[in-house]
Amino acid sequence: MSTKLTYCQIESAVHEAYESCKSMKGGQNAHYIPYLANVDSDLFGISLCLPDGHVVSVGDTDYVLGIESVSKVHTAILVLRQLGARALLEKIGADATGLPFNSIFAILLENERPSTPLVNAGAITACSLVQPSGDEEAKWQAILGNMTELMGSTPRVIDELYASESETNFNNRSIAWLLKEYDRIYDDPMEALDLYTRQCSLGVTAEQLAISGATIATDGKNPVTGTQVFDASLAPKIISLMTAVGFYQRTGDWIYETGLPAKTGVGGAVMGVMPGLFGVCAFAPPLDEAGNSVKAQAALHSIMSTLGINVFSNTKYEIAGC
Ligand code: GLN
Image (cartoon, rainbow, N blue to C red):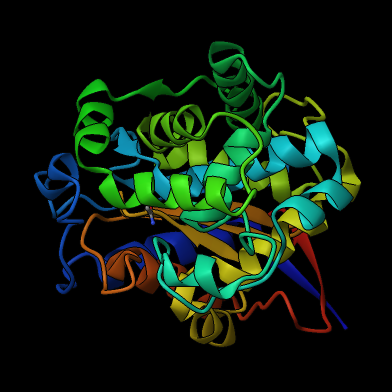
């Protein structure tokens, strides 16, 4: 089956989602990172980027938010680019943990790999794998350069957030040392942790995340800059990781309900990828108990239902003019 979607339909679905969710209450800001606890809870925005680079934005989409765990997607792409799909599977894995993002128990349950680059343990391992090994500053430049290519513009570290996370990340320090104990980290553990903390502290806009989602949706070609950022064969790999674990212990419910592969962060962003159609980011700071933005989830759910689309459906979608 093939279905035509017009630009106007997509644009009005974004506006409808914004209007229907904007006064929604529920959830609370990430309380364990002091900087995030103090961000304005009423911020809300949605950006959607189409394959021709056209961006639809509504609400606070130029607010600079903490990227947090959405960055795990970008650095997993970097590891795929530098080392290939096989190495990522062998050294990190592609399994859902079914447990919270910062779970130590998940590390103890796994035998030889941290499961997935989209939870804290696997993301710290991913930072340890970034090349060139043994040179933290050069690794950081590789992480930032990859983000810049995916987003089409350079994100900047929010210094206050980086300081706030670095002072309070005791659980993540335990994870890094536990990975070392189990030989699942491939460079200095504290440097890998620092790279992870820095990447989580990057400030980005919903618009930048929507563009990076669209780069994944269009097989690695950034639709705004026109640059082929990564090999098209890697797009299904990164989308499968997002589908399997993007919402941690809530992932099955999410993907069953919405049919949208997506990844959340405790800064309040959710970045979604609809292959061939769009990248999207909804952002609102208050989170549910799994650390996923309440309003952003509702907004993306609304867009998918209004358009009647689903990544698993046997329908070929085509985008047409209005
Ligand atoms: N920096 C946060 C942490 O390590 C990211 C968690 C998240 O966004 N789920 O806890």
